Length: 489
Ligand code: ZN
Image (cartoon, rainbow, N blue to C red; front, side):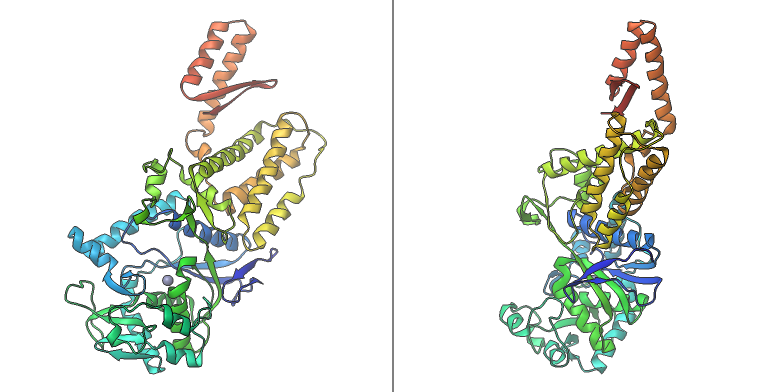
C-alpha cells in the first residue's frame, strides 16, 4: 500500500496506523438501521462516514468485505431493553405483517442511501434470518458461564463477566456507576443484577415476532445480532467495527462482552464511531419537533426548512466536517455547503474550456499528496475539501488570465477532482447528469455561437432574443473576452 492510513480507535482512544489482520483483505462491520421508521440526518451522517471509509480502503488497494446489518427484531422501544419490539408495534398499529414493515422501511432506506451515493455493503444480513446462529451464541455464552436462564429468558451475567474481563472497556464506565444510574425496568425480578442484559426474551402473548428456543418461545436481545452476524461473516477476529457514537453504550459495550464471553478474546481490532448531528444546537428528537427525515430534506418539506436540499449537498455538508466532530444543521450551513459545492463543480466544468500555455506560473503538484495526507490522518475529509477549493481557485485564476497552466496541469487538476471529489468523497456530478450532459451542452454552445455571429453582424434582435429566451429557460449567460459562458441558474 502506497498510502498509510491512520484511524482513531475508540477502544484504545488513540490514533493507530491501520494494519489489517489479513491484508489485502479487510473485514468491516457497521451497525445498520432498525427498520421501523424513515431514515433521518443521523442515518445520513453514519451512512456517508462509513461509505467514505469503504471507498478509501478500496482506493488504496484493500479488498473490503463490508457487512452492514438490518435490525428487524429484538430492538425494544426502551433503549435499556424493555417495552415492546419497535417493529412489532408498528406492525400491530398498522395491521401489517412485521416483515411488511421491515421490507417497506428497508426499501426506503436503500433508496435514500442510493440518493446519497453510498455504495451498497457486500453483505446485508437480517437479524430475523439468523435466529439459529443467535441461539448457538447464547449456548456458547451459557456454556462458558457468563449467562443464566431465568423464567424462560436468558441474561448476560455482567458482574461475573467483569470479574474475569473488563465490562466498560469501550465506554469507560464502571459497574458501580452503572448500578447507581441504571433505572429499575421490567424483567428486573428475573435478573440477578439490574446491569444484566437480555440475550433471549420469553415472548409475552402480544409479542408477534417469536421463535422456538431451548428456553422459551421468544426472541433474541438486540445486542446479540451484531456479535453473532459479524463473527459469522467476518470471523472470530476481524478488523473494523463501526457505528454512531450513540451506539457505544450499551450496544457496543454489550457486543464486546458477548464476543469475549464466546471467544475468550477481543474479536474487533479497531472500533470507530461517527459523531452526531444536532439541529440548532439541539439533539434531534421527535418530541422536539426537529426530527427531519431525509426524504423531507430532499423535498424541502418540513417547517424548519427554507428550501429543498439535494442529496449531494447533504453529502457534501456532512463531509465538510471531520466525522468525529459534531455537526450542527441549519439552513444557513446547508446553503453555504450548496454554494461551495456548486463552485467546485463549476470550476471543474470550466477545465475543458481552459486555454493552456507552454509554461505554468503556479505549482499544483503538492495538492494531491496533501489530500492523501488528510485522508490518511483519520479520514479528514474537511481538509481534502479545503485542498479542492484551492484547486478550484487556481482554475478560476487561470480562466481570468491571472496565471497560466500547462496541458499537464489541466490533466492533473481534472484527475484531482475525479479522484478525490467524485471517487473517494463520493460526490456525484449532478450538473453533469441532470441535463448538463454533453449533447445538451453542445446545443447551448451552438445557440451562443449563433448569438455571437448575430452580434458581429449587428443583428441585435436575434442576439437579444437568444439571450432573453435562454434566461427565461433558466440559464445565466456571462459575456467574457473569450466568448460567452453559461450555467444553469
Ligand atoms: Zn449493532
